[in-house]
Length: 379
Image 1: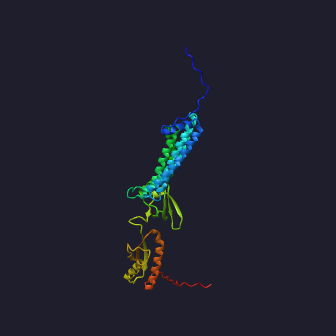
Image 2: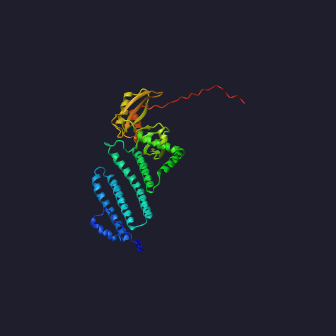
Image 3: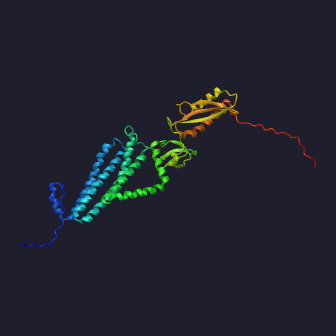
């Protein structure tokens, strides 16, 4: 008959086993400190944070040397994001290891680790968005390799990257907490349909913004004229709207859906940004037309803001009711100069015509008053 051994009432203290990656000379020290879990946890945290700080400094030092040649202004910012992410990951690993050596219950330990991992994912979302934006800016400057990524297409690619990052992070958070994403995706589909009906105008502006960015009928800095007569410089091409700055320094915000369905006159489009000015001039019948042409061309050619190429030219447009109609055609370097140059040319033309004795006609009307011959009857 076998006698069962007496039970031992003395509880064996928790001892964390040494990790496999730990060097053999440090295993005895680990086993000694394992009898004091709190002390070992603090040591692991301090060493982990120290390794994160040292690793961040190393990445910043050598990364800046490698990438500063490609993009001196954006490269260091991108390397700083990478260094911060590396430090976060090392710090997270140290915290997880510190929690594991304490000897908490499995449920509490798993909950703490999931909370830390969730915080890490949320922090990585912000870093990933910044890194994607900086990376797109760097690619947009390398025109000979990545022509599709330009300043005008940055909002489109930035939005796509943001959606992908948030989607991947949401899926990772669901997996961390052991939540089945299938039901959530189905619910999101139903909610998406409801939101689509409720926000039709917003979605129309959103898709119109995609098409405007891809098709590029205008870009930042262009001067455009809308159907309603609004004229201004394009200061921002967003996903929902386009902003124009008028010559009165008033900003106009136009929904992209309206921009996509309107006829737009791009004064900065065409072969170049130069803008042509038309100055209509009328002189009296009997004037020397060759002298008028020479005078007008000389005024435009001697103006500092008028382009020398193409050269200014004058065209006679016809015979008016009281004048010979001419038109001075000249170019300015940018549409914003149209108003001031037109004003200056009109002033110079008026003074030059007066000095040359060339009459500027104006409509005249003769009023004839006829006496009907009716006399007032005597009282």
